[in-house]
Length: 131
Image 1 (cartoon, rainbow, N blue to C red):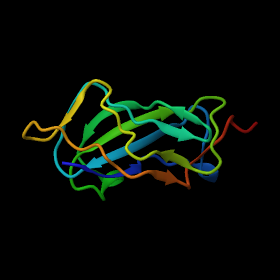
Image 2 (cartoon, rainbow, N blue to C red; image 1 turned 120 degrees about the vertical axis):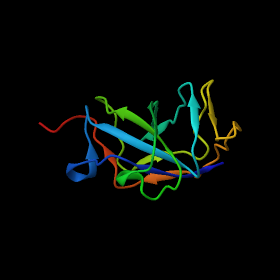
Image 3 (cartoon, helix red, strand yellow; image 1 turned 180 degrees about the horizontal axis):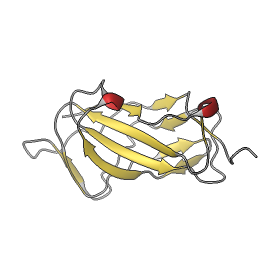
């Protein structure tokens, strides 16, 4: 079992930019069904800051994750005042973290959490809402 890819599950809206209060949704796909215990973490890099996402659960691939063949872990982050990224939100390679829990395949084996880095250039973050 392994990670098949990471994608954005949210639309940044106007000017490809998330603003404070907007929710960034990131999806991590696996090649088969998984069982998750605990609350895994997937840090996002916004400009010069690292932010923690909230684990939302396991889902079957749907319209927003149609390129994945197995199940998908969904993570969200709500943009705060002061967050800023003008060159694309980044997920660093191999940054998915069990955070004391587990991600297991259907046979009960731990899955490989290795994955490539991804930068989502069409997903920018503004430090504040335009007035």
